[in-house]
Length: 219
Image (tube, rainbow, N blue to C red; front, top):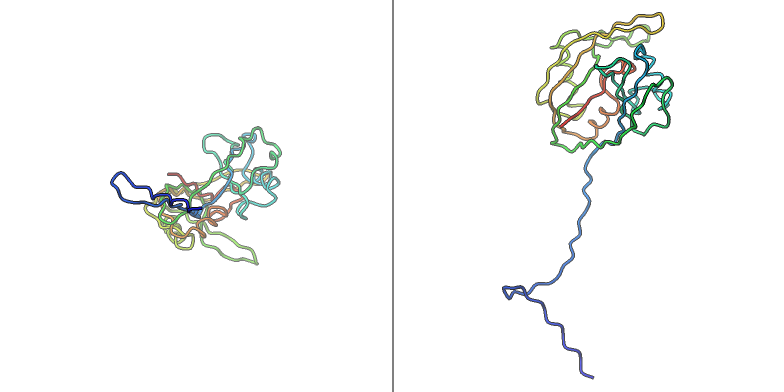
């Protein structure tokens, strides 16, 4: 029986021969931080320490330990923005309302640029009787210089920034508190994804239990 004739190669419109090929694509592993963001509202007279303790009970850890951070909403007393590495398992005690947590993926590839806002307490640390004490910075120049010193170890490069000192006052039980802090705003560029991710999740500076140290990025 004669062999079947070979199937002729197909030709393009110009007459040149071409052969079908299959291309494979590899998924790029882009550095990122996956977080969940929400807004919780307590009674207007709820102080930051009380808000922290109620949130810590939900996440099983204190703020700044890598599980959650929070910050006060400047427009409404008792309302706090919360960023966590896991979705909420339950509402915190005393919450008037909780916005359903939304998943957010923050891209951290080197070269990406973001605007940022950071409300933070930073200063010189001293150890007295085995306890850490903070002598807070009180001027814009001190806060700006401190944040510049954080850049390399936290995996970013500052493009521009400015600081504005302020004071946080509140009462917790019978005790009054006064905390010197500052708001730092500007633009940065990602350099090293791993340390930047750690800083985003753990926060900056001191007194994170008071709703400080959460870096907010926007494009």
